[in-house]
Amino acid sequence: MDTNKNRFCVIMAGGIGSRFWPASRRSLPKQFLDIMGTGKTFIRHTFERFAPIIPAENFLVVTNAAYRQLVLEQLPELSTEQVLCEPIGRNTAPCIAYAAFRLKAQHPDAVMVVAPSDHYIFDEEEFRRNIESCMEFVQQRDALMTIGIRPSRPDTGYGYIQTDAREEIAPVASFREKPDLQTAMSYLAAGNYLWNAGIFVWSNRTILAALERHLPEVYRLFAERADEFGTPREGKAVGEIFAVSPSISIDYGVLERADNVYVRSSDFGWNDVGTWGSLYELSPKDSDGNVVPERIQTYETTGCMIKAPQEKAVVVDSLHDYIVVDTPDALMICPRSREQHIKQVLEDMKQMDDGRFV
Image (tube, rainbow, N blue to C red):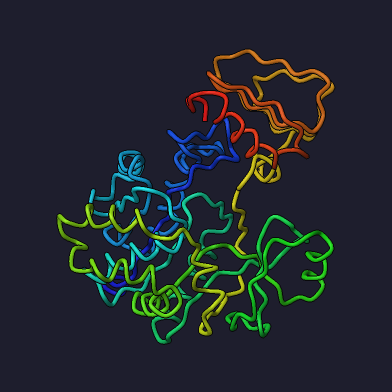
């Protein structure tokens, strides 16, 4: 483990996973659920994916204060001090700044990988090989590294990274927003565009310097309280910092502005499992193209994803290309083609009731 003592993993676990409503709620978001049906939650899978190359004591989980106990229950290998609690969500730049200033106080020579808590990786051995090569690269260079996935189709649901070269590790030419289908097809044809996986690798010194240069307001808020990180005063300091911090992503705030950004071209079977539709695509299907437990009776039904409590008898007849998710207190029936509407439905529900269903 000596070779790994300066390697850290920062897991971002503060989101609410609203597109997986009604299974995912503010009280129990997607990352703490076994939505894949594997017997393990997303955050557990994420921890175990990195555990062979990162010592357990070198993990940090940044999450909402409301989820501290959930993290500790699902990752019992971690101590309370390894769970960094945001009092309010401010997007990924303040989240990463928090982790970086904690590491600066305790492990200034750290090299960190930053990863979301809720992605699916098919080939975990290849994934770890990729991450280790990135860590070796940034240990020797003043480089901000991101992971790019070689696209298998013209997907409009992901951001893209344009590279300068076809090498395995290459400088980033530009970041592109989620494209329309025609643009996505042109990216695929060009051959030098990758899906943006939202996984980052850098030394702690490099990301702190990048924050200071490109997001001076965020950097200053943390730097002014730097001596309080890793002390009993940290919680109070973080509460006051987040109360006035801008909400901004690390992509927009730093990576799109920096000139030392590199991307590693990868192919390890990645999916951000961001929607019921992406889960449908990943899941094994029956002969009618349904993703449905055996106990649920279907007749003349095709292309559906159906989830319901085990103790409930469910019969579905003559339904095509729908998502049906039943929970003890909520039922959603939605065409697969309309799943992007779920976020709007939740906004409407917030206005209609006291928030107990969201």
